[in-house]
Length: 157
Image 1 (cartoon, rainbow, N blue to C red):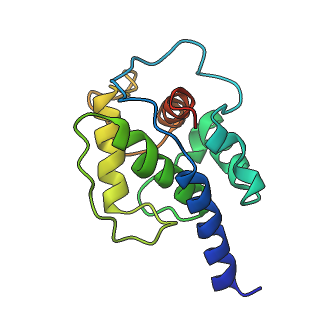
Image 2 (image 1 turned 90 degrees about the horizontal axis):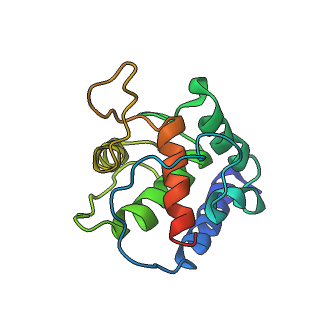
C-alpha cells in the first residue's frame, strides 16, 4: 500500500470513529479533577486508538505521562490528528461559546488553528501549571491531554 493510500485509510478510520459519537450536553469549565493525574487514558476515543492506527495510543499515553512528549506547534503524526479530532469535533463544539476556526494545516499537523483551539480550551478550563506559568500556553502536555481525556469520558467518547 502506498504512503498516500495508507494516510487516507488512517484519516477515513479516524473520521469513522469521530462521526459515531453522541453528544450528551454542553460542557462547562471544569477544575482539574482529582485522580486523573496518573494512569492510563480512559476515554473510548483515546484508549481504542490502536484498533484503527497502530502506535497512536502509545504516543498519546506518552504525552499523558512524560514531560518530554508534549505535543506542540509544528508537530506531525497520527497522534496529532487524533488529538485535533478530539478537540475540534467533540470537546470544543460541546462548549457554549465555541466558534469554529478553519484549519488550513494538513489533518496530521499541529497548525495555527489547533494552536488557537488548544489555547482557548486551556483558558476556558484554567489549565495552567502554576509552578512556572501565569497564563495558559498552546502546548498539549500532561494536564491538557488528561483533561481532554476526562471530557471525552464525560461525553461518552
